[in-house]
Length: 226
Length: 226
Image 1 (cartoon, rainbow over the protein chains, first blue to last red):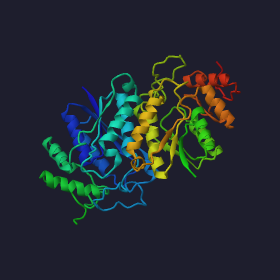
Image 2: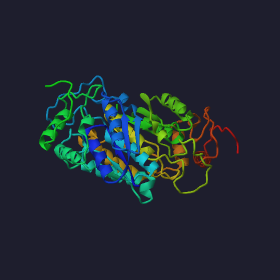
Image 3: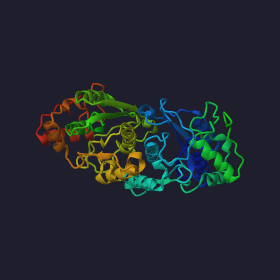
Image 4: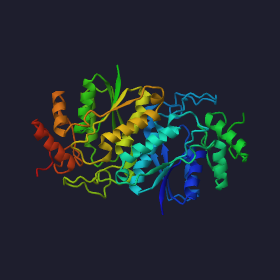
């Protein structure tokens, strides 16, 4: 059975991505990172989702990049801001995060001889991060083909981003059609320990609108109602 | 003062690279990884070298990629082989290692606003790893330019590999001319806790020949004489 690694944060997009990889017939190896993110409830969600969707294995890697600072998602000195709609790269940007995650996935893919790495980035309803764009992904693929034994030997590991051109609403509609229970997922940048969302950060705002536009009942639980 | 991150394993090449970055006028931030390598004496060497060469900071990141297995350098089930001269990719290859290390360096470079990342790879006297070739490096640079806020905003972080076209002997001659004490460096894939080298692995063999060809006295201390 063909194998895929799926980057799984426990959020809406990566969980949808896992459901897609599973529906495509892959034996899935979920990969999550404990990287100093302020909220750890997404990792709890990731574990439940990996189990519910029948992953072959779920690996959580401790990655102390939070100690390098530089992002509102990891640095206690920087507050997570409320949604503004700005198109500038926000303070929640974690420098080179997708590159770091994909690189470790690439190493693991070589080891277990996986054909593909799935990740849930989207260039439509996203937070303005440079490493969520198609041109970034194409460049990562080109680099990966040269970086690995698999690539050199003619069977490069494919980087698959099935949500890249989908809006949040389209992603939700797709996951919903695959039977994914979005009540298990946590998207909020600062969810509390029980996984309750703040309702005001970028990620909460994009998620909320997605459910509205997809006309799917929103199962998100909020810590406060604003 | 312009800043550079230098990937520092504590071996001959990366230490030479640090000496070059320093000579080029950079304020140097050394970055090492504890990634499950069988021998930890290179990290001890890295600490001493970073201090001796006046690094602004030396960051050691715990990176549990060894638990993914797949390499003789990290997997207790796979022995480090003696030098054979084969051109095939050897079992000491750690899948995607340079990509993972460079990615984390890239994140740190964004945070501290470093201009460059130095790494000591060479495509001449090397062990046949795919991620030591100029075409790999060019692809990583292209990806990095698209991955980062710095790249998007027009001041991409440069990936510098000053040894890429140098033989081991040329590297040694260069470092020697910069006053680097190679007695501090540890290159062996399976050095013991005191940093004594095995004398038989690929890395030992290439190093030994380098000193001979450079006609520089070899300060390497061996655990056994074969």
